[in-house]
Amino acid sequence: MAKVYNWQLGREMDYRFEQAAPDWQFAAIFNTNRCLACQTCTMACKSTWTFSEGQEDMWWNNVETKPYGGYPQHWDVKALDLIEQANPGGQSWGGSAGPEAPYGTYNGATIFDAARMAGTGQQAVGYIPTDEEWSAPNIHEDSPVAGAPLSEGAALPVHKTWFFYLQRICNHCSYPACLSACPRNAIYKREEDGIVLIDQSRCRGYRKCVEQCPYKKSMYRPDTRVSEKCIGCFPRVEGSDPLTNGLPMETRCMAVCPGQIRLQGLVPVEPDGSWKVDADNPLYYLVREEKMALPLYPQFGTQPNVFYVPPRWVPRPYLKQMFGPGVDDAIAAYERPSRRAQAVLQLFRVTQSIIFRFEVIEGPKVSEVNVNGRSLEVFDDTVIGYSRNGQEVVRVTVKEPFFERPVQFLNSI
Ligand code: SF4
Ligand code: SF4
Image (cartoon, rainbow, N blue to C red):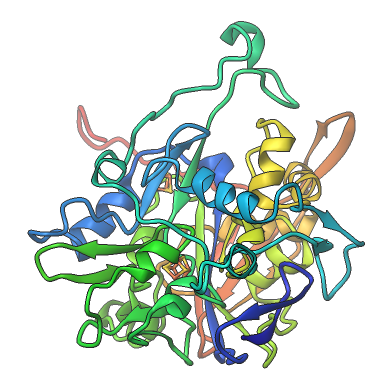
């Protein structure tokens, strides 16, 4: 076992391989507050990558209704339970937040620690879901926790009757459990973008990756007898798609989102796996500066690279076990966003090009609203997004422009 640094846990941890950080890391932010559960992302992914015979139950992107839904069913409860069995009552956070440990320090067991504690002889604790658990990707859609009649149960700050949508793809983790689990060393993490791939020619279908990925995002294909997973739409991220003229492009699931909840990009990485300071990168800015978006189950220890703006209306204890101790700060940052954050939030799903740098041009004050008893000023600032080569790829304002189309014919739209 090697010692690696996990910035999300604020400490070193054991991992099978020595630290080997990529130059850039694929990352994304999902704003759960805006998701429509339209499943456009799910179908865009399915129709691009997993439409063939043998892939019927394979959904690299899925959107599940929490707390009851899950694909495969109960994936997170089962993973949490395996850690708890190995280290009863030991999962807690402590210490204070700082630049090296933005959420404090995790004192509990990761999935890697739990395997050692339980003496499994494996790299991480895990299990293989049953066929039935994979068979209903959107089970319990829109089923709420019923704490009160809807008329009384849906008032902020926290609803008594609640559910929310959790969008899920492979996290292209910095310490992938799928990769460390593979006895064939068939899984690798790309140096240029941190995307985690399975070498199909090396895989023999032992399903160790399926067993040990706590997010259950590596999947077995019965007709080819090898495992497959989300490939981060790497031809698009590389910029080899003709549509953006050689410029890096967002994945299919990100680029189609009608709710404009998704922002995907690449962040530069330090040799110890933490993110290089780059406050003009929109992902770095929202995750590290504003702390508005949080990793999903950071306590698993894989250092996932998809981050979530938590839903405002959900009971905080539930959110804290899911996103860690940064939940209160993240919701506060989202409810009353700073002037710069208001501008950056406009960049979600407005261009297919990956934005590497943003710039804000200040505009006039257009509104002042009351949020939880405190005033919030809104400015019509302009935010400009630039691609990897410095080319401007998008320019939007905080206040949406209003266009009136002249009527030319009856029934003209
Ligand atoms: S396309 Fe966007 S809004 Fe629709 S389900 Fe997916 S993440 Fe949610
Ligand atoms: S989410 Fe799972 S499949 Fe994806 S990189 Fe992490 S451990 Fe591997």
